[in-house]
Image (cartoon, rainbow, N blue to C red; front, side):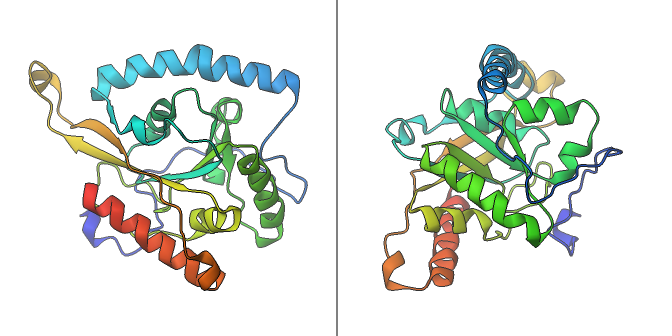
Length: 244
């Protein structure tokens, strides 16, 4: 059924989004300040991290492979993954451990009551729909990358639960990587059949995240920027397809 969908940009699951998020040229995508940072770190590392470690282990028997590929990361980076679970961002966060990572998400995620407040503290960043607001978005994300932070993108854009192939990519994540001359960290979310006692009560598959080796596009000075972006996108897509 999923194979027959015409629009790959359309989410299969639709959330209840009754509120409205107003994004203008002055919107603060990455909020700073000592008070906000204190409570954000407290919630992220003190509450969400340990709780989600346990929940993801119980629900998905989550396994994380390839941590050695990011152990020596010294610069900012773009991370990308397939988008196959509502809360796969929590798994991405666990994979990065104590590294500071921001998660780009649909504007609609900030239009869900209560959730909008929590995800802001947990470093979610809404992607603006209007081109007039993109300049501020790009500037703030570039600044975070220069500080050594990681920004996660879902280049497939839409959520397709439990889909087991890599779909077409949008270019935005790779544009950030080329412009800032930083690596892309591909991460593949794969599914596996439950084993042991889990087979008795588990209907859906368990999850493994595979962190691949960082990819940095080496030939960017030999080509124009658009070609660089397309070549990097193709390189990352191929690497992820081989591991899915």
